Amino acid sequence: MSNDFVTVATLNTPTEASLVRNQLEAEEIRVFLSDEEAVGMAWYLGTAIGGIKVQVAEADAERAFEILDEHDPVPITEEDWKTVEGFENGWNEEENEEESLAYDSLEEETDEVPATDLDRELDRAYKAAFLGILFLPLQVYSLGMLLTIVLGPHKLTSAQQKKVNIGFLVDSFLLLVMLYFFIDLSTVR
Image (cartoon, rainbow, N blue to C red; front, side):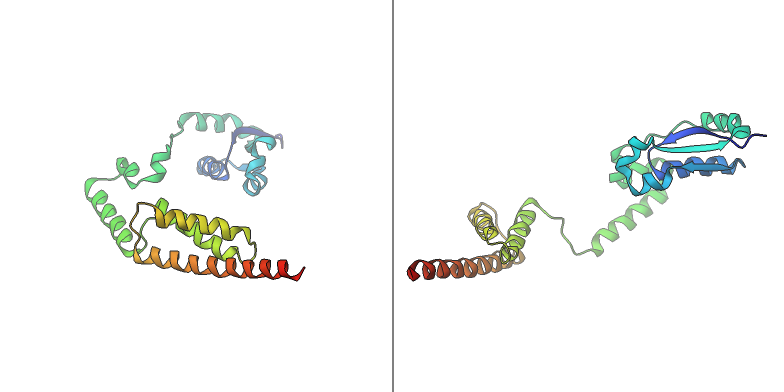
């Protein structure tokens, strides 16, 4: 009996490798995963390493190949990960309704409104105003973004208006301080 290992599958992620390992171990075949930790820690090196190798003893190799050939891979699309409806095929109608109600109640419990482009732009300008304390050119950037938002066609909520006001206050204060030092330096000569 040989102690050599035979690679029966090469996979890209530790999750896929674990699924194959579980499948083979359920059939009482001992499995060794080569490079699992390396790919798990540095996924970007997976291709260079050659992926995660699922290895079995040479005596179990033929049976392992047969087991793996019996099961077709299940393609998972991006839509399956994004929506609950992608999993409808495995549920009956009652379970689907219960899951949908539970999903809806989770959405209702969170008070956060999905961020719009305006919210993201406003957050960027607001953060730039405060980061501008450390890096002054960000003040000009923040002031320009805030002016674009205020002069734009959108109606601001009270929370958005509060952020705009605070951002303008911080920007104006720091720009006035910069102007004061600039004038002070120019009069020293």
